[in-house]
Image 1 (spheres, rainbow, N blue to C red):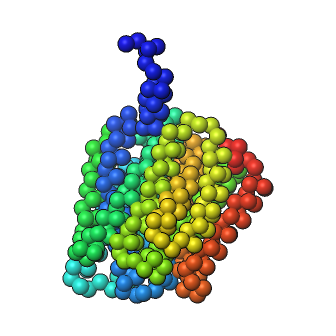
Image 2 (image 1 turned 30 degrees about the vertical axis):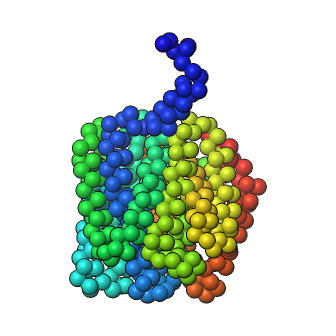
Image 3 (image 1 turned 90 degrees about the vertical axis):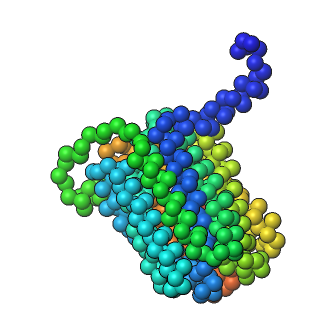
Length: 417
């Protein structure tokens, strides 16, 4: 059969499939994708179990916010971590960070199995996890261009989001089921074991040697250089601010899901897992959509669309009292989250110069990771003071107002390609 005789629809489907999974043709990226998929599955399982355990022990929405805040506070270290990522092997940094996270998961599991776990233990371990993540995130973002060619960078970032959110679908659901059947200890143990996959994948990679950094400028000086670069570049500046707003006002809802499952939907640990998984399902759909459009030149328009879908879905979620409808709205929230964060990240990585990539990645990461726990803390306080529904409605209205202001006064955002 000649190529001309192949049905057009079949050829088109094959082309779309090839474009959607383009980054998987690189061996190093395939190792990263598979190893990280296993590890992130365990992390989501622990996150869902930990949130429900905290709410069981404290019955406090505010304390859920405290845990998220403790996890995000070390994000301030990311500026220094960006300097480290520009000076040393990014793979080695990620291996050390992931190993630290594995140890913390096993400590949490041990305390739980021994019946010694207390809320302050979880706060302290969340802080430790945040320190590890502060060094992991900039190095991980800056590592991506070492795994693939620049032309497939947007596709790789979209597939990273797909992998992350596939785990977000099944990890929390599995965590809820295991929690209900055996308690939280096994959720934490399985998370610790899951880190072996990503650490092994990183060690198996064959990466090109990067030229050594020859300058002798101090750490603070290099941090200032990275900040000047990021905020003197008008497009990178607005993208970093977009990530910060998304973290502050958009993603804090996850902190309330354990309380929402119990107080609003009259559910349990399984309900909490299903809600988190629904958001993950929407994120997977959004990530696959983004991967298929990775060579589409109107990425700024996609980003703008995402900033409007999010508050609309958040507002609708606030009025849902049945689990299936709440899950549909959370799925839509997940889809819009991927559009905003991953398009912004792809644009930053395509605009930044290699010599400051680690530092700019750290600024982007810090803005996002530091703003998210602050938003979670504020939302937890609001929920305790005025109720979960009113707090979510207020969040949605603020998100919508900011989206309208950006649309009117920052037109260059939607013009980015």
